[in-house]
Image (cartoon, helix red, strand yellow):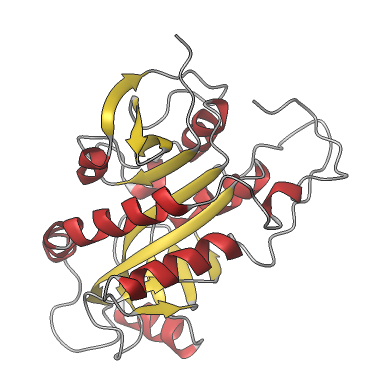
Length: 268
């Protein structure tokens, strides 16, 4: 039986409980295997494919995640829209732990990651001025507000290479540029989605203030993972609501990202 899905979710292992009638499938890609087997199930009337970003046992650090395989595998299953929850640090004193940010911009400060499918066979320059799906962002913001979770509509996510956290000087520099939040996984995930003409909607949960925002010992892994786990049910609820109400009729610019561009190979 060939399984398909309408919407993809890329997140932590805690999101398995979202899916009803879930089945696990292995998907091969030209870029190797995805982070783990993909779980396909239902959320309401939507067929959903879930991939744990770091693997179910958290085996992949941010700079080693097989981003290309993850997005390719989702598209090969029929996914055209992706919802991507993640944990982030805050670069603003007024965005404390528990704040939900739905960014509208990103800054790439990574290095050495495979960040394109189009490495040979001709140049493919995708538009990326607005990196996220505007329709998905609007829906996520509205549903968060309706669930009593005041969300920040917009802001800039800076993505660092990791796996270390920032120094205080780096953090202060990021903040001085007006950037809002900081993470390690938002790039190249978003640009690869765009290269496949997918909608990509980020949901960023602030788990801590970054090192340059407040005094103290700085960010720790235990602090981040503990806070995200404590708020995972709230995030799962929001993801489920967003996925269930995403229209399959894509009226946003995302499906047209590759229009008029000769591609060196066929997409799945």
